[in-house]
Image (tube, rainbow, N blue to C red; front, side, top):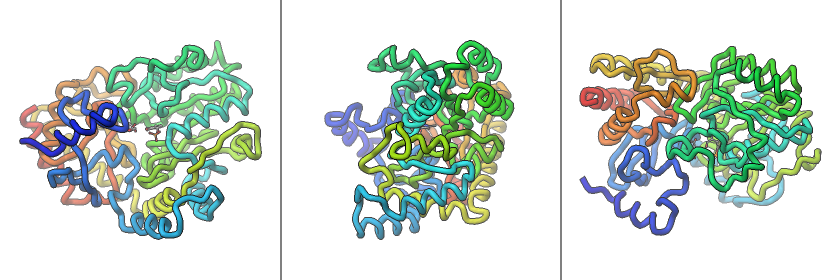
Length: 427
Ligand SMILES: Cc1ncc(COP(=O)(O)O)c(C=O)c1O
Ligand SMILES: NCC(=O)CCC(=O)O
């Protein structure tokens, strides 16, 4: 079947690098042409040929209440009609910050930024400024945006495209970056025994969503909290993905383990470009203008993004709304496991609230990058294309997490499970 996506992609590739504006959108790992989309409503997206898909990418996470939610569309339109940006404070910025603090009480003070990358970049600078130390520790397979110092053994597109450490990042910049295997607290303790006095921060995805979906072991996060408390390093949870998803209050609420700083992104903007760094007021106040650590942004706290984020978090935090989406995700995964088992396809699933992971493996435990890499990649590629053909949109990589929204309903569930039953039969 020829699709309008093919000529559009060919044309795009003449003008845009690789035809895309984010490396993960290319179909390099699965083959074929990226599908061009033209609209979305609720759980569904429509491609340029008019074909409909149940969407489990949701713009890589932000659309927690689905596409084009009327509250979000109205909030953006009403705000835009009054002006799109001022370079001066607006009430909306405080309103969104208040909403975030209501949902995540550990976050006393925030700074709005434009992307998850910026939030993580500023977290590293702030931690270094606050502690007067240079080193940071991150984990293999975790992704914190394309921050120079953090593009070391990173997940997401770095993994998918097999780019080990990115050219263009000077060795001097990553000399102060230490890495350890995810979920391995003994390795962390060894690193702290050697470098503890010079570590400014430990950055971790408390639910890793960039090497497929791998939740941290509670003992691992607890251990990180302890080593940070003992050594004076700051614990930074990168909740760009897990925020408002692992639980409404993020992974920190899910585990009951609280970081010093939190990076937020994706859902906080409800599909418009905003993100935030937040945390303990005494640390956050080291940022300019109250403190000496410089941070700024022309469009930071943009009114349209604030309005979109506020409408999204308001709808999502109504009683039972997030919980219903979590229950829906459970039914999705149970249905997929049941159908895979009937077809004799080994399938392990992970769930963290409205995030999920599918692993084609006989193993009953996936806790680190090596376990993810050992899964059957060819089977994933066949599964991906089969589901795409059947009208189910998944990320084009076995190293990405899946996402569910509050708009995913019985129709979407049945459509997905019927598709999976047919696809599993041919795997
Ligand atoms: C955990 C995590 N941190 C940081 C980022 C970077 O966010 P952005 O793509 O908005 O720069 C992402 C996703 O891209 C992410 O999943
Ligand atoms: N897991 C991948 C992402 O969350 C980011 C998407 C992107 O870089 O476009």
